[in-house]
Length: 115
Length: 109
Image 1 (cartoon, rainbow over the protein chains, first blue to last red):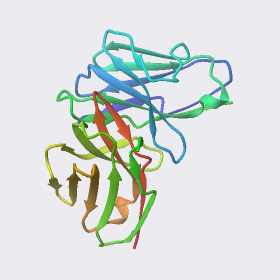
Image 2: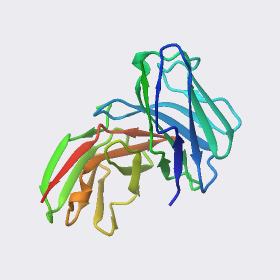
Image 3: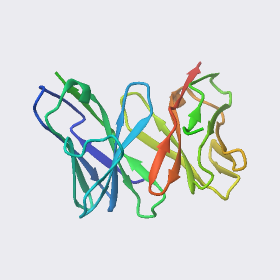
């Protein structure tokens, strides 16, 4: 099956710093990737849709200047949390649309803790 | 309703069948999905069904779709302790997936 990786798997950073999370599709090309945020014991909240070579589409209420998304190639999308605050602490999960446009494959997630 | 609804918990004994139910929101959803999430991990795609199908079976998994009632179910036959996880249903609207809050399945031996 299709594999999506994320790096790092967990990160601790200080308030005010920026953190970059990478999402890679390892064995397929993904023109569309998605970034989700998941709070403990809750569902996934779609943050943005990332299309290769174009600007990301952000969901309502998600600050695009705080959560910078870059989809520079067909296998890599990055999410940068800028000027992180403790309330940004969360589990961030990316997914990539398979070539059929039907399946969506998820990465293992990145646990961000802002101190 | 506006949300994808799922019951929060299900507890079964090993060897029994598990049935997880979901009610989705939009009759124009093209595909409906079931994902499994183990603690601290991402989501694993288990199966999906096209909206014009009523049923799909894949080994121990059976998906039933009632489009009229916007109801989706996942049946796991011969449930094992390794099936303990959170199960999310999701509907596809455009390119995005809209998820339910997840059902925690607990399997006791």
